[in-house]
Image 1 (cartoon, rainbow, N blue to C red):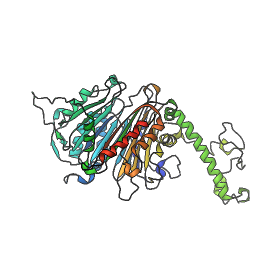
Image 2 (tube, rainbow, N blue to C red):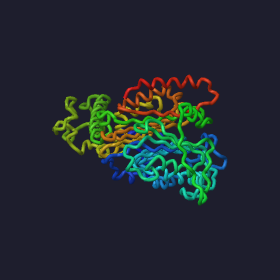
Image 3 (tube, one colour):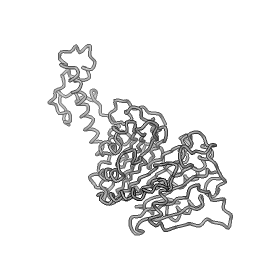
Image 4 (cartoon, helix red, strand yellow):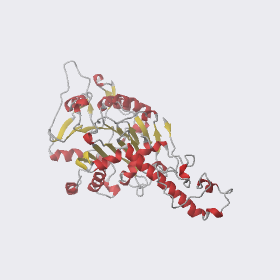
Length: 485
């Protein structure tokens, strides 16, 4: 694990932006990543809150809360989940972990873990509670040893959700069925509620949540087992539950967009061969532009003393001939008049031909993902992206508020583009009040990137219970009905 500084002149890296958070790349974890076989795109999503907001951390907890936990502790937990850390973007308010299977975000007061494939996310939950108690020093309680830990921090709230799996028979316990997942959660928490939303014989979504000030399930006696609860969720209850989340957070909101059956042409953007071709075209185009800019600023090169100007040497071929504007720098044929004919003069970067962060950045820019929260409005934003072999894409975005003293938000995107299992997800907590855009506008832009045949939207918003106008604000959701895939 090394801290990596990417040169500011490296065009394809958003880390060249001034004032961006620190990025750490795990080179070992990126070796031999391959998404050749059918892949389970729909993620398991876990949120564990240990206080209602960063400003309300318990007095006994360490300064910085969960952000004070060393990354090595989280890596041990992720070993139980069966995924690895690819890179980390650290910022003042949140640390974004890009994983071999999706993402993790660590705030002072909460942790968000999102994993796809056959990961065993819930196996890591007891360890999360243990780390929060022993390392972050959140208040702890006696836990059920049978669930994996004897010491656990008492969470403020817990949320677990997922879409129906594409290949449920490939999942590992406790994710073989929703019943098993709920039983696993009930063994840890008292009073949790489980819901199914949608058609049981079609697209549907599962949700498990606890009430504020969650209580841990006490150690079980030999004759006692916590029952599994499956409840209906009326429409009014959805809004009520969502609106009670983190009331001290003010305008906290989380948007999740789950998309299936992606348009084949749009999905092609997330294949390595396609991305490499795009990168090559841009690389030589920018190299040519740099040459022309140099000629413009240097004036007539023939009139310069070449022994005194090193820049002239870089824009002159090995054979001593000057560049000719008529030369096609994109030509695949060798030309003695072309300075690009020599590998010694211009070597195409290896990282733009193989999976990794470099091509991931190319894809995030080319597909339009970088424009969802543009650098012009968010100058300190950072996108940490990774493209897999032969296809597949993951990205985390860390979005500091453009306002002085504002908090930092995130977005995360994961794509499985194969035609027989195509899927993409987008999640963000950037508030609409900060972006100046309505939720429907953000959804429309993201849907336009992938053009899915089907998609579902979940929106959690923390609103003041006394907000009498909230019902009218919710009517804005009618705009979602006209969004086309």
